[in-house]
Length: 184
Image (cartoon, rainbow, N blue to C red):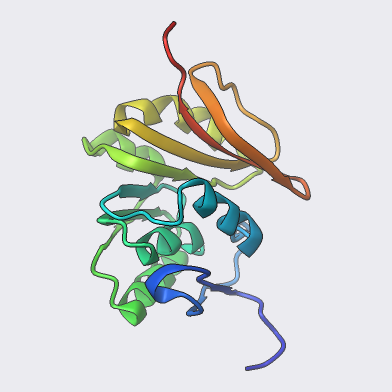
């Protein structure tokens, strides 16, 4: 393998551990770094057995494939960009990941047509947009009772309806695991 690691990501845990996934060139793609993914899955106890997960801005697929690798019952990966979606589809086939379902379309469209609820929702939208602020309020109706939401962003959006359980920072990227705020 060459020293060039551009446009690829390595799965860090579970049954697909050490597998390399490739994705196309895109300025909007910013795969979650290994260290941040490791932290997230440590927070989740390393195991996603029985969980239903939604990777709403799949991009490289790093977060969704990581959840699938850790025995999630189902991972729905949503991606609007056709070339990026096709790469995710190829990686799903490469891994023979039967627990992954793919949806080619926008996050907004998926949320408006789906009635599913998920144990874990992964939100890592393009940073140069207001998508996180727009989508986060819509997530509650798609979240299982004791479900969690993982977010990555440069600046925290309005988190009035959410409680930060764990948080971290890597460079300019903030990340957190959220749950619904309790109504005291």
